[in-house]
Length: 503
Ligand code: UN1
Image (cartoon, rainbow, N blue to C red; front, side, top):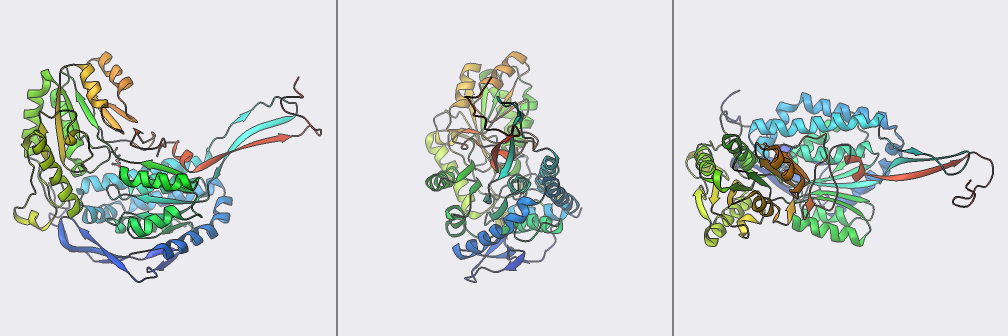
């Protein structure tokens, strides 16, 4: 692989509505830029408004009757083919992703692979999608269930996993027989278009997935408020999620929300400290810390804290920053200038709160790094549980070390946030491991591995303010996008009254 990023073409993206390429009705556009070289425009996309969303919902509604009648296995075949297209185009999609949102190429390949995995996995539901058949209390009567689609669903996705997260939502939505209006993050429109192109190439009928590019306030909001959209699946900030839940609640519309995290790695004093350092390094600084699952808190028992902090700091200081397309680069930029300011703002907050800055804490400006939005891997130690840097989601390459005395204190500190997505424990003691697994308040728990790295065959999601009780991925993904229908078939030829004519 060559060491430098080739100058690539600029994409002229358009909405995909009813299978047609369309600009925004207003003619407005916006640019997507490469965060490693802010001057480079990756593409220009329509800045859609409510009228474009109206067109997209209309197209999705028109496509619904035929798509929901398409047999489940036939829908599954199309999803499987889309996964195969992404697999074939993996390198191209990954390079586009690195250019568009900055994660290093190996991670961009992983993101694309996660979508391939999701497609292959959920396509199999085309020949399962089990319902129940249960006994009836009456003679010559059957009782059973089947899944039914919701209708038109809105999928609103973030920039940090710009192919994987759309796949978690759109593949299962389609599998269950829904049609989709897709509003991807304004930072990653090109990746979203690549995902939709894979579906098109796989033979998805026109109008079944419609993509409207644009911003949350004028485009996302219109999707959420549209009465023709029966459900919203959203991944993003807690603030926006709360707003979506309120709007959907007032409209009696389903919303499934995957929001913030402040995920803790607990390192107990009997842990393999080197293994824990490996995990913390990957969990905190992978994707420049821009994962909902990032290991943004490191809760370390007193006996391990000196060695852990020293080794982690030494290793993090050596991480190579740069353009993720360049061989050997380990940490890419943050996604945009606003995030860069936000991350630095939290460094200032931590310093003011009296946390001890042991590494980083500044924008990286030397050489070509000055052309992009790079922030140095940042570590605070001697952090107390109540500090804002220990409570609020920073979504950047910043992690905090919280020293604790005992496993009781470790679990209390780990559980002491509003979020509950992912958590991990490092220990060699099976009793302590199982206790932590049982008591950590999180939707996902790891033992001797960091808080990132969920696989698509298990459900993904969190408790407390991380969400509103839904799960993505796994077989549970279908629950988000389907209703149960209960069916009674009486073949007795006479009126039988439930609860009354029983024997
Ligand atoms: C996210 O950050 O929103 O478990 C998704 C992980 C990835 C997915 C992260 N498989 O870290």
